[in-house]
Image (cartoon, rainbow, N blue to C red; front, side, top):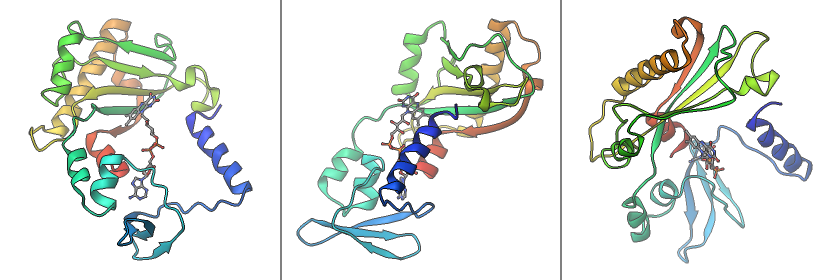
Length: 213
Ligand SMILES: Cc1cc2nc3c(=O)[nH]c(=O)nc-3n(C[C@H](O)[C@H](O)[C@H](O)COP(=O)(O)OP(=O)(O)OC[C@H]3O[C@@H](n4cnc5c(N)ncnc54)[C@H](O)[C@@H]3O)c2cc1C
């Protein structure tokens, strides 16, 4: 019950019991390093400096080396490495239970092998996208009110790059239409759109801006 976030809450409460202090909504702008290359603390978005014996950084490696630590040639090398795919995600609260869906559902495109080239080489979303649908409320009653469902849709797509010019607003629109059309066709559902009460969308910009990925 409570989904993956419950794991985080449990780890937090154990850490607090052992004396840890969590500072949420504190943007780290810099990991301070002395002239011997030893990390000495962090500088926050509000300008505060926090000195410490040890700095453990859990942010994305490429971002941390390029944006938090002093510039090095290693940081540049990391920045040139091939990256994995990004994704467009829809988080839907449904006004009904969509019994045709299990807890985990994978919808593969006809030419799914070829479609990977469009994700990894062209850095965009395939013409016919494959996607994954998770229904947490199918196995966790706390995930939705009685008689309703929560649905997460994940559509793999290319990552943001200077190399290509992708209109992400248009891509999100196309992803939404194609996912709904596929669900309606393959699960024999009519007017799936009218079952969606609320929607949150994450796209490659969200991962970059909100999580520094
Ligand atoms: C769309 C998507 C779907 C995924 N699906 C799966 C899956 O099904 N199964 C699976 O095993 N893995 C999945 N992953 C991968 C999984 O999310 C990561 O491997 C995992 O979150 C990495 O955990 P982490 O704690 O190392 O880093 P993160 O979860 O990235 O945590 C790093 C934290 O640091 C914070 N942060 C970054 N920069 C700063 C800063 N400057 N100041 C302050 N805070 C900062 C971020 O906000 C974030 O909270 C998925 C990832 C994505 C993006």
